[in-house]
Image (tube, rainbow, N blue to C red):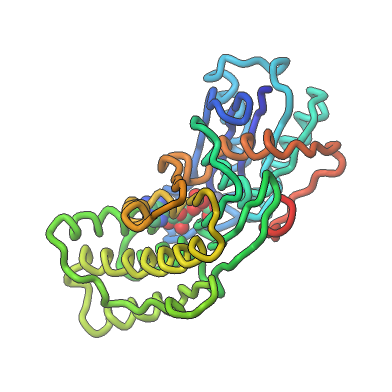
Length: 333
Ligand code: KG4
Ligand code: ZN
């Protein structure tokens, strides 16, 4: 089965052609990130306008690269939410129009659930039950996935998301948006220098017996540090920020693995592209099949939207599909 996936939840416009939920025939991505780098963060109106400009060329490119014609497409999958409403609407309305014109079924997809499906692409499928840590720019959720589309929410952030913590602290340190890759690159340079203890910033809630996180205090701590001691060694501060975020994600997730005993542990979302996070998990993990998608499939793109749709084929008539910026990851996806 050939699925055309469409993703426009934030500042990436992406279309992908996926065979049988696993094989990537093409993946086209346009991004307005450079535009947002100039303003230090996303301006939703600008992101949505750029989606309008990019959506048709990106879909055309995806079809072309996959050497696929419209008549070979079986279904159309589209991110329905969560995300920025203006951006979501561009993808959803385009998918609905194609569904109507091409007479193909449409499958609305939850973007958060879909991130997890990057772990089904180009590899043998992980075994259920899976524990999944979804860490993105807007969300930090720990979910137990008992089967395709069956999610039990275990815990999450009480304030900022992990990606948001990277983005906001990067800004305080004078680094460009998106903050995660910028912080990670600087931290890498510092880490190459030796095995210095990294414990400058607090690890909130790390000892609490729940599976929740809090990241908003990190901003304040970085702000205070910069005010008191300046930005003399940005690489060290980046390594400290990264370590604080990675440590709490790792500790709480490992505790959940111990308690819930899943067969596999899956990382997903943009922050899962973080090298240090992957390495620290790999060092600590025991008795569970641990998966992290390659970095290019962690950040927003349409491949996993189509993969998620393949395994959860609850198609809808185009009239009944609507963007929902507040979708969560609970119950059935
Ligand atoms: O999943 P994603 O592409 O978009 C959302 O659904 O939000 O995640 C974007 C987030 C941003 O906050 C970005 O800073 C973060 O992922 N990110 C990273 C890395 N690459 C992207 N964070 C840490 N390390 C990275 N290498
Ligand atoms: Zn995302």
